[in-house]
Length: 267
Image (tube, rainbow, N blue to C red; front, top):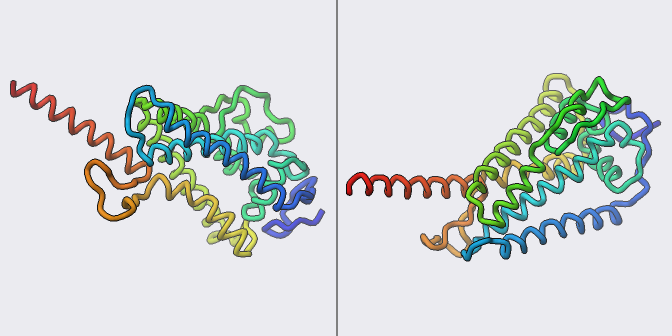
């Protein structure tokens, strides 16, 4: 059956066009995301076990990792479980994946790299290999415990002000940076070396879907933005984004520890 995906003529068995317009599917998906993000934002301000000033970066981080956990476990988990027949399904998540695949058809062709990257983001329990695609994904029989669950653990640590919060924050942020780099690089290399493009050329599909939808996982961990309204004071540090925040908090803690140890030696 004819389909709109690139490269033209690529085999997508049992393809079924979407029958749910984006004007209906996106609001539902957006409502799910909104519920997750708002819940985490509110929980971050009320779930601390000790009285403390909740920083805006803490609320942002809880919301961000809750979003990551939802997308990795629910949305990408759906893809992993149903990847072999997703092109012929009509569920909400299947239709959203088919829409996104206009920017990257590897999601509909059981591409090895795509399966591996998406699998490692999802929590998987021991399952029998898929009979339709067992040779392509031996990891079905393995336990995977990675970025989705770790994102939710980070949310819990933020909301309870747990000391290990920055450990999980750093691990998940670095994993996202590495995953996005590989995701972009493999597609770029295929196009440059073999002339194969997996994305339709329209602005919406390449720049909005492919580049724009994945860019936050490279930007949020790595960037630092100044506090609004001018220069920040010591009591009101700049609004910084995740890896920079973890670096500063850990460096401050070790600096205080070293000062305390030096004082004890001098006594």
